[in-house]
Each structure stands twice: as structure tokens, then as C-alpha cells.
Image 1 (cartoon, rainbow, N blue to C red):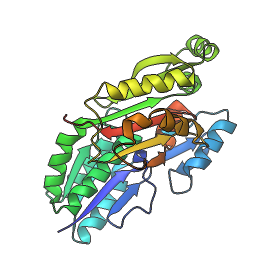
Image 2 (cartoon, rainbow, N blue to C red):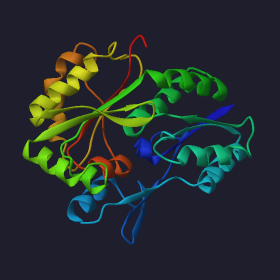
Image 3 (tube, helix red, strand yellow):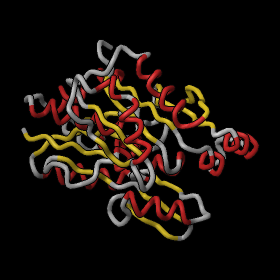
Image 4 (cartoon, rainbow, N blue to C red):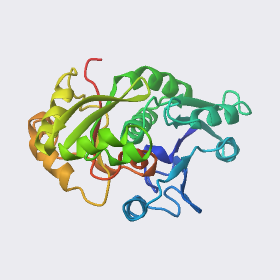
Length: 282
């Protein structure tokens, strides 16, 4: 039976991807202006609004009705569904998918990615790999539940300003961080964002990011991996790629790069770089 992958736009997959992939948009609001992520608001447009505006945007989860409509269309077309969502600890999107899936027993399999942005993206890409290998929808979902624990998502932020604006840190902490050019390194662990450390300046930040990757058992280059960045320019990411070439240049001729959209960009702001991969031997 044909298999359809359905995910939310927090995965930062930008359609068209493949005919068997559906991306459901998160809602992003700047004050009274409301948008659908990836539909009428590109990643670039999001950062233009974020940088130029004084209002911090608000994101909304994909509704059960959106999932139900997508599930219905797939089942009607004779497809089974693997739905991969943003971490349930970061959004109610997983719950929306589970509620909608109740009307399609045995036809829809919902997987909490336990991740976000490119960490969620590489799990969708892994699902597509497994489908191409001939696994059924149930087998794919079971495999993803095991392998999602291997994913590491680590990011270097350029500024503490957006964490301050979102109420995640105090204005005093943000001011001191700005004066000291502190670059926090964060990760997604057990579905939640955690701070791993802080560095003075981009160079030390890149070193800390590389160190955190080296603490793992290594990158499994046989499974999907990806780099991402926030903002309007990939200059900082390109510097990181150059600084970290010892980690990857013997394994692959190039690195896949994606932009990080509004769901995570709202909280970290422009100028962040991120790395997502499956940990080897995990």
C-alpha cells in the first residue's frame, strides 16, 4: 500500500519535496497580521518582519481539523499515513494529530519527533528512506520511535535578545550577555530546549558547538543529517562549516543546508546556526 508522510511546518521542509509528503502549516501572527507558515509567509519574509518589527510574533499549533482533512484525503486515495510532528513538549501539534488519528484506526500512525526544525526534518527524511526500502507504515513508525533517540540537534545562538523579548531570560541577563558578546549553545534533549553552555564571541561559540558534537559517538553519515540557519544570511553558518570541516570533509563532499523558519526563529532570532544528525552507535 502507498504511504504518505504528513508533517507540520515546524520541520522546516519547504514544499514541493516529494509527491508522497504533505506539510501542514503552523500559524504565525505579527499583531493583527496572521499568516500560514510556508503558504503566505516564506522564511525570508518572516525574518524581514521579525527584524523590522517591534512585536514578537506568536505561533499556533496545527489543529485537529487540519490533520483530519489531510488524513481523510490520504486514506481516500488508498494511502496509509505516517504523521511526524513537532515535539509534544514544545507544542500541542502532536496531540492534535493523535485526536484526528482516532478516526482512522490502523491507517494513521503518529510519531512525536521529540524534536524541532532540522531535527524533525531529518526524521521525516529517514521515514522516506525507510519507505523507499519497502517498509510498511507501521514498520516505519516503529523504527522511527527507536531511532529518534539517536538524533542530536545542537545550535549556536547569535543573540539573547529574542529570548529576552519572549520572556525566557531577564533583561539584565540579556544586557550583560550583549555587552560580553555571549553566544549560548543550546540543544534539544528529551523533547525540550536546554542550554549547554555559553561562549564569548562567534569563534569561541563555534568551538563550543564543535566540542558538543565531538562529545557524541559521532555523526552517522549513513542516515540523514543537515545544517540550518536563521535570518537573512548564511554567513555565520559558512564560517562554522569552514571551522568544523574536520568533522565532515572525509565523509561527504557537501553538507545539506536549510533555513530555520518562524516556529523556532521566533524564540532564537536571526544569526543562529544549527546542526542535526543521527548519532553513530547510539
